[in-house]
Image 1 (cartoon, one colour):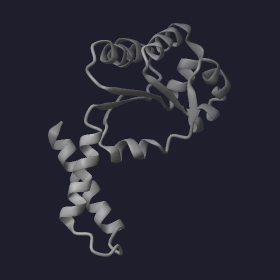
Image 2 (cartoon, rainbow, N blue to C red; image 1 turned 60 degrees about the horizontal axis):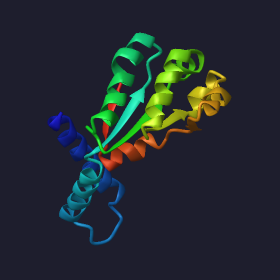
Image 3 (tube, one colour; image 1 turned 180 degrees about the vertical axis):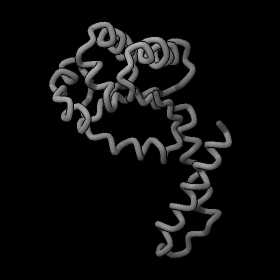
Length: 152
């Protein structure tokens, strides 16, 4: 895991240096310090990316881990992102809806990808459940902040 984070940091550093090549007087050390600071900010933040349409994986792994992460305070900040086939599954399955409601009641932020939800024509249903439905280009911000990402 640390190797992945290190490699992602190097990748973002390289992308940042190329993207900022025209900025005056920005040294690699200054940029590295900025990346490290952003990474430290996100060190206790988890994004759980739920993309599977498989109910058993959702119930027995993803939602259980998300629920227990908050319950046992494994992470300071948890966001559950419902993306892809999971938006359809969630919109149709009462058991999963109840589980997600329990997770939301703990204070976990739950968002659904609007592009995905619109494709499956379930945006209104997810909004009725109290889920924020929005375009999830925001995932890029989560990566840049150095948040931990769990994807199933």
